[in-house]
Length: 515
Image (tube, rainbow, N blue to C red; front, side, top):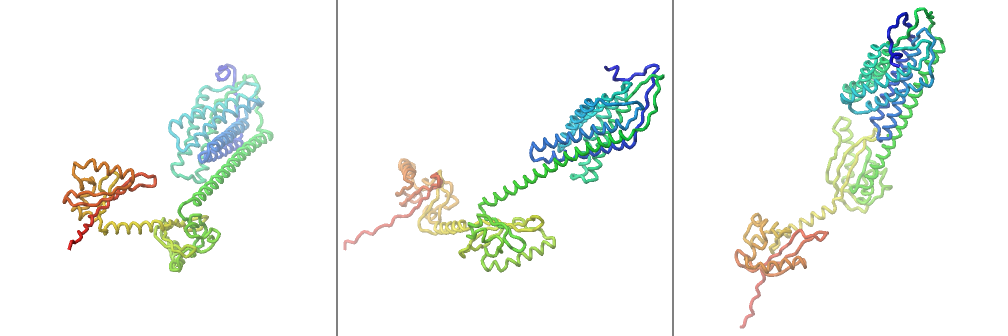
């Protein structure tokens, strides 16, 4: 088998010389470059695929398109060669020779679909791809049926394999090499990449053709032959047209699938965003540059009392007190004029404003205002937080702080470990201790001596059981008697986190006079 495959000089034999049709050679290069362009496009689809299924489909269809293109280039290149002898092709073997080309193309597309390509992947991929193209070429050559058996020069056979691997690595590298100059390749750079890749694939074929040797006895008359007839030219054109049509249909199918998937993703993103807006705890309102409301979520309905149907399409001034509404149009006009003068856009500008409920009640709000672009139109989005409860809590805390600081009784706040967290001025006077020095002290150190441990334990047991204790204790520093009331403070889960102690001196009652 090996002796029949490789050529060796035989005595009394001459080599059959052939020639190429330049037009068909150029056609084969064009088919190869167009197939390479489709491969690069489908590899880009695979890189951008949003699902594993879409990526696998893009790689599979890209492999088919590029493999068919490489096979068509090879077959057209064979038709371009005239060996001056009658040539026929074994149809089943010719068709089967496409399989190594598709396998090599699958390797190429898989590597081209990566965001980055390491040196190891480049070398290994080039070897596999080059071997696949060489297998396709020599199996396709094996489908030739001639009077004299074609053989191959061992030296040129080896060179063709090395050239095939080198050009395959060049074809893989070219996309990543050009990408280093720009993140988004221009049409010219994409065309250049396709031409380089196509010529690299075709280069292996024509290098391998140099290894072809057809030996005939010197006594055999060799017909000089004629150039290719119209039937061979038509066959080459039909192969090119069918191949490019297949590649075009595959690319169109991938483009449609890619567009449909992108549309589904966009539609899903819009649905997800709308769900987030509808479920948001804060009110979200968007307006156009005229101040008309475009979006109004359920949280905004709860804040203002107006339904979405009543507000959308109306001017947002209906949600403001009259004093602020009169200034709103001027504010928008001033900002729009600033945007035309290239001023920076609004980005999460936070302020406290007043809104107006449907019933006329004023509502304190925190407004986070930003601007955005939607289909080329500027809009303003406000995120509104109702501060009514917080303001009410702040007022209650202010009142409590006032009572804490100014009440006559001494007040001590203890943490869960019964250590002093804070004392009010009245207790500071009673205990003759500053607020700073009192903090973090054990509360009972201020009241009792060491022999009172049993009473202390009983007191805390009652506080834990009943939540409250009241009794009398003597101040340690001056021996004065104090009425003490201790209350446990618990959270919603009934977990204790503080104690409040109230201290005051009992009122001495005057003894009735005997006179």
